[in-house]
Image (cartoon, rainbow, N blue to C red; front, side):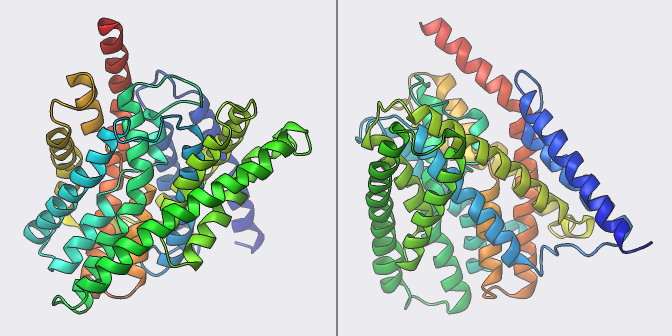
Length: 416
């Protein structure tokens, strides 16, 4: 085989992947499958081809930094773009269900997964908490299939709750991850004081403030330029990328949580001129970029998976993933929401079940493993258990998303 042949095959594969991915996205409405499922299938097919051709490719255990930063960029842009489409008033009553999911259901999920990690997988306490922190946040990228629509639409409370939860819990999982790494590294309790002061209080508050201020300022610059047609609408998507990454970078430089800054910036931008005529166009441009990032990132991550790696968690690790999807998340969310949040049992069941795991979890586990804090065997087990759980979630939630949305529509029609 000459040097040109692998490159030619690579271009061919890339063209097919992008083409099939676009067709999947365009035709997923009213189908039993989701586009994310197709992206995973494309990535796994690429993984088989890469292994068969013996082509050098990303090693998910050795190249965690690559996986971390690719997933990081996709999540950051998605968080900012999601903020642009949320119209809900910022008050405690309107966000009650979201706050309960973030402040109660999420810690319960971390604890439950950590207990399962120790009981089923034999992980140490620190590694188990890292696993719980990586799998607790729902995913803003993949939750788009069951989340809110474009700005201005009157979305059901359940879809808003899922979208807003997925937007904020990617940042709120950081303190749990840091706690797990601290326990794995040092044990004891000496780290708790600085963790509360810096990793909880300072980083949370500064991240939100940075996002709110910079999002407000960005809107003050961008919207007048769009109104005067000094910014072409075709560039809206790339403008989203620029603002999201700049806000994230500032937040990270200040040692705060950039994920929280990204979603706060999107919300602040949206509220600078909520009824501005260009908001819908800005959102549409942002969504095009998000969809491209979703395709590229999922295919990249899936193409780095191996059969030997997926066998690392064993049946107990795959069982843990299934328990999270079918039991832990639904029970934690349903118990938290109770009968006092959302309008109906259908909405509560919808929100409880559709806790999609995806690129946020991939980012967290890659970041944690990349620190070198976990013991080698535990790091490998945590990494591949997260990957297995993400695959379970993509398939289960992808197959059931359409049925879930239809149940919401029927419930709304019956109550209307």
